[in-house]
Image (cartoon, rainbow, N blue to C red):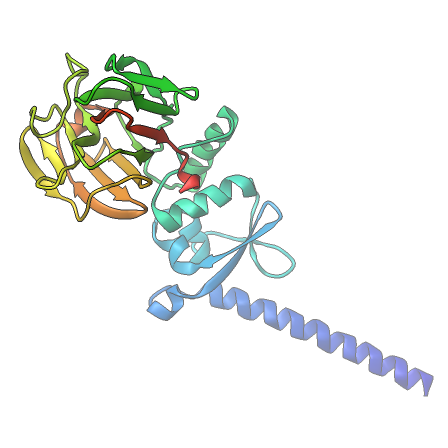
Length: 306
């Protein structure tokens, strides 16, 4: 009887092993299926990146068909697997979390805790064959290129109008952006609706005590908050309307893609206006803002804080 019991236990163990192997095989077979249907693209996948498991939709990973992730998910590249059948990628899980968020939101991070983290992010973008090129950008209010009536504090993260009402222009970052994509987000505190411009300039203005709003003639482009004219301006012409203004407490995000000549704005995460394929932007631009009322405060914020 004991011999029969032992034999039965061995058979049961073998059945469980076969069931587990079958389950892993079915998962691999499912993940290697061609993403030809909407249902397939809605499939939930698990990836093991550097020992940490990430869960996402197939469509998030395959949206860039030439990327390493898309090729792994469609079986075009040979895949390493962990013991549970998940695709295994031997890269940093911390950086992959940023990569995955970029794929989900189409927004590149702008704040890194260290220069090394920034370089690692760029390196992994290249490893996964994911464009566009991220341009490191030191987002601080300029102490040099600004109106005399603006005060910069908090290590360059906050600017306030300390003079009388009027057009007060300031550059963000000091450097001219010559390629790639840059995101800049500000949180605005304004006493009342008035002329507030946030945009890009092809050249530094000769006078920072003038604005680049529509009344003075745009030197560049910007989201201009005014009851009768809201959107992206080029010189005095409204070239792209916006769906709403921005008020105290709002987060306003500017995204400029110099290589493509694109400029877009989001207010509290919702896109409100965009300008596409502008040749002048492709020559390089500065990011700038014009503040008006005394007491106006704009704060630069990390993307993750929104």
